[in-house]
Every structure is written in structure tokens, then in C-alpha cells.
Image 1 (spheres, rainbow, N blue to C red):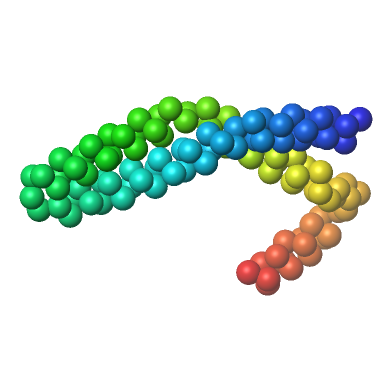
Image 2 (image 1 turned 30 degrees about the vertical axis):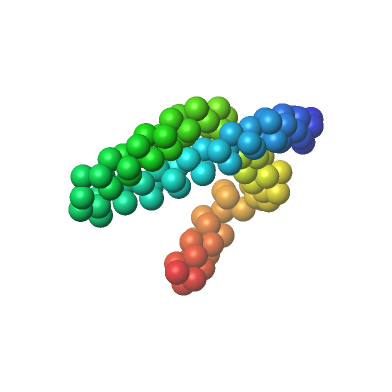
Length: 114
């Protein structure tokens, strides 16, 4: 039953990701343009260049803000990651956890690896 729930959650997250793929690309492009506009604004020495970079930055910021639904797609990517990790997670043997010597040996092996 747990696998079915993970499958269902992963399927819903995949649909949300596909539905928000366009806004995610638009948000990424807008943020990249905004980044370069800010860098260009900081490097510009004349007022006219600063005005041009500011206008480009404002347009890019408006583009990025209009693609806010992409945050749902980013959340869907995170949910897919968590579902993938839960799906492929290995079950630990709980019988050895009560034995202090086995626990010590595991911790000692981990310390020697690091």
C-alpha cells in the first residue's frame, strides 16, 4: 500500500512538473537576464548605459515575477526527489540495533571510512 501511495504522489508531482515546465523555463531565462542586467548596471560608467541596463533589468524582473507559478514546479521536483529516495530506500535490519556490540562495530567502521 505504501508503494501505491508513493506511486500516486509521484504521478501527481510529475503532472504538476510537466504543467509548470514552461513557466520554469521562463523564470530561469528572466532570472539570468536580470543577473546580467544587474552586473551590467554595476559596471556601466555613463548615465545612459545605467538607464538602459535598468530598463532591461526592470523588464527581466517583470518577466521573472510573472512566472511565479514555476515555484509549484520546483516544489514538484523536490517531491519527486523525496519519492525517489523513499522508493529506493533500503530497509534496515532492526534485530541488530538492540545488540550494543553490532552497533559499536558499525560506528567504528563508519569512523574508519571517514
